[in-house]
Amino acid sequence: MATDATSDDQPHADQPHFGSQHDGEHPDRVDEWDRLRAEHLRPPGERPPSSAAGVHHQALISSDVERTIGFYQGLLEFPLTDLFQNRDYEGSTHFFFDIGNGNALAFFDFPGLGLDEYSEVLGGHHHLAISMPEDNWRRIRDKLADAGVDTWEHQTSLYFTGPDGERIELISEPLGTMYGKQVL
Image (cartoon, rainbow, N blue to C red; front, side, top):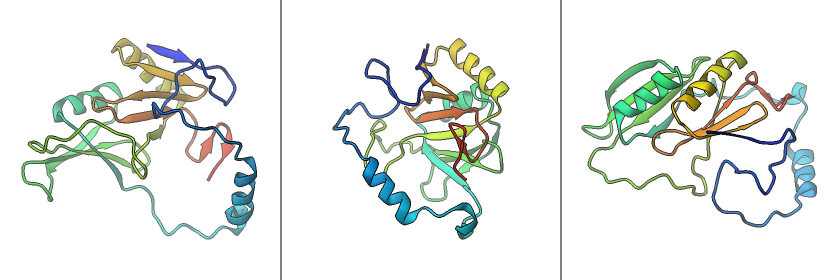
């Protein structure tokens, strides 16, 4: 079931939000952000090139390989590109999906480890945002609704959780932009 947010950029108290169930203090940090931008942010022509070539893969943990394949390949239309034994844990599966632009989303399963459910922790994964053309975004949004996946739609973003609670955002903006602003 999709929940629509209002058209502005700020969530409202009566709207669901995507993220932590915690709701701590909300200090005014405008001065801090201004200072950080002034100290660290350089105009595009003055930035050095990145030392990185791109995201090789983001690895998440799956409790059920077949269910994960069904969700990511069947529902989200990310083709499965490979599946093999994890080199670091005998009996563990390492498998990959093509998420476009030469990027991969990978999963491991760890049978027998008795892992806990997803938990938000400092330094941990919050969500993965994946860009897609608007026509694909709308089609996948409808497929998620038809499959009964709870989603939250806000402007060009569609938020939902995967089979193991992993947080996913599909964004119908080109790579390098966020809310119409060039960020790369």
